[in-house]
Length: 181
Image (cartoon, rainbow, N blue to C red; front, side):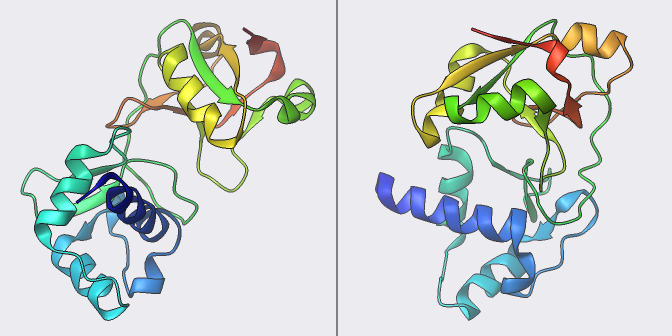
């Protein structure tokens, strides 16, 4: 597949594995998993036939590693970013002292007042490095990078999780733990 096809298919899978599994007749199991066979059948029923080889290409070539197969290769899930109720079964983890978040300048007044909120998602997503945060922030325009004092947050009792693709997750980042870069 060319890059445009990969992007289109990745967005389609993100929509259905993170936000609307029911639209393909899917039910996410514990951990957010769904049978690969059920996913492929659901895609075909809804006019988006995907082969196993195409699915594997999307999973392995996605620069953000949004998707993962289980050890057996028979189930797939989105790594994080769900708006539907799902328990990804992530264990609390010790974050690095500083994490990063990419956003746009228009969001800054609300962030300064409220901190980072999870909104319709399960967690606030944080990047392990500034370059990744910049790529995330660029999706909506000129990026603004925030540094998060994750070590201090954890010492204050905040819980962090690391998803399978290295994205750090937490419920909320209060403004006192943020600084603009």
